Length: 236
Image 1 (cartoon, rainbow, N blue to C red):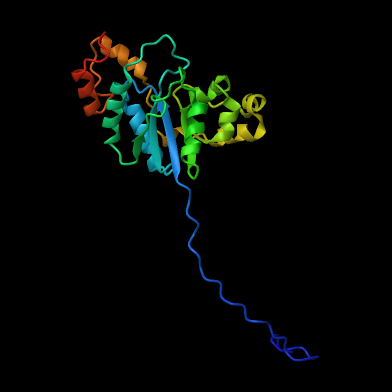
Image 2: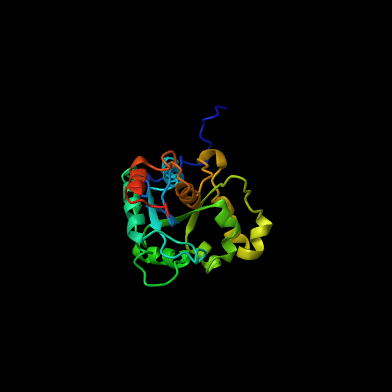
């Protein structure tokens, strides 16, 4: 018997011809806005190169730099005037078309700048965008001490970059503070160390070096370094 022979017992069954389903383009991905906060006093190459690499890796579509007003953890530290920090950030914006900045914290009347409040405001301004808060491993380690930390973790996505000498928290270290789902979310947000540049510098180190007569040209964009010298910043 041939393998393709129709078995006896009746005519071949007819199946209805289904209409061809047209191919559809993939659904558009929501715009991903990365938020990088800090005093940016001054904004240095560690900030701009980190942001550039996040864009290059395709983790975000745009990085918004947000200079803080009065950070809660820097009550007694002098911070350069808001206008001058904005001026320096505007110079940084020219280095990458994927950079933007906002004065959303500087324009607030509140005495403190809390990340949760800022991200909640951004969520209302950009309801259709995916928000990613960018922070270092040092921030993750101390995140449970932040204002409304558990709500912040639920509110937005994260991109967490490594810091020299710091390990990521273990799952069990986060579990009691944030619960299972949020702990996994935070750990999954960590970017591998070999994918991002590690700058072991801080703005406070640069201010101190400047007061000691140091040359900051290797750590700042040329335009920012020229501005620092022209305005005689960080020499007193």
